[in-house]
Length: 241
Image (cartoon, rainbow, N blue to C red; front, side, top):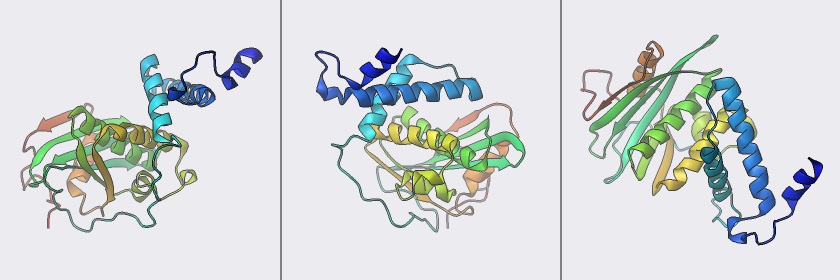
């Protein structure tokens, strides 16, 4: 066992350095295996070997030293009123509904185009141990949905400052719980496949549709999704001003 672990720090003969440092790859895969084990133990999610490998490679690419560095934002991206995204972009508002001492949560997502027209909405019941983690899960579901729809240019808006701060690279990791951090790191890996992605903080009243969907999802027992003009102006309080 000791010799096997020591071998992680020495590249095998013929190792292609274009894949990165051998020791970094071994350490990252080991970490991803540990994360998969935690998901199996705490969330009953069966591990998938290919997903573990891809997650490790995406993480290495995300934090590669040869990737152009981006200076952290010194201020939080804040949107005061809801407005459509630029032409060619989509916007997904996300929110989570959580009640203390109750691990059952609801996630609400609403997708709109550059004309402000609703193109879809989702209500996802799930479970979480904290409000922070619930918001992180909502953000992850929003990004996964955008990826499934093959959207390339997306604005994401939520009303959890700590989540938006982390995803905007304007806060330090120790301010986020480890369970939440796992979801947010998954987001950062997924966003590598997009052409343009931005995360913005909005006050709760601006995020009212996603908030209402999240509340309904928490009271539901199954995921619900509607596509194309799913929300009429009178369904919920409109966030547009």
